[in-house]
Image (cartoon, rainbow, N blue to C red):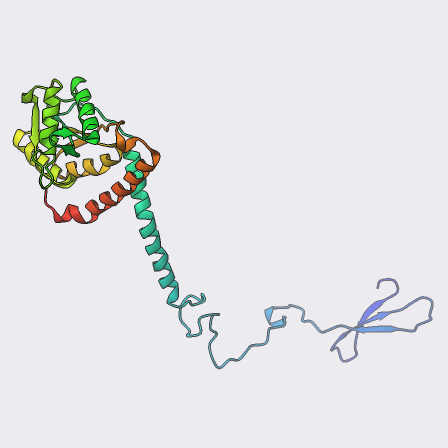
Length: 276
């Protein structure tokens, strides 16, 4: 009993009835019917969701064939696009990386004690070194006087019609500037850097030399060093910082671009075609 109300049951005992009596007597009785509950409710008494009857199994979105992880399927064009961008990245990125490597090595100047100094050939005019070759010879002479090596090896052949070789011209110039002939070795073979390094490698093996400091122009360091090492010479580089090849920024950029192409060509093709 609360505030004059009472909970009673129907005569048949099926549903409880709430009777609310007011003391004023204005309204005789208000009845609220409540749903019947069992004394010990279980999960069976709770309302259940209606079961959905389907003739076909549920299929994940975007996987209409019934297999897979449920992700949206994409056509084969996705792989075509990926391969295309990968090829573009290789074609564009590889030369850029090679150019950066050429520039980075061009800044090196290593003067460790070695068996010999190798001077790469350049243009000569009837036995007189051209500007590029002369500056290389001057730098090699400086290294020799510093005691970097006890011998200097000059390399380089000649062009059709020439009576002098680049190697012979370099040897003569060094001898005239104070280097004893017994300390000079000329290898007058090779029309390019690779041929010269192949010949130098053979001469090193004959003389039982192993280490060398290569003298050339800064952008040419990487390619010449790589070719020397491929021919059995443990080489480092000390470039000349003077001469027409380093006069202007435009000349250096063009030189770097050319050397990047030459370096890639050697690494990808010439290295495997020509045996050391």
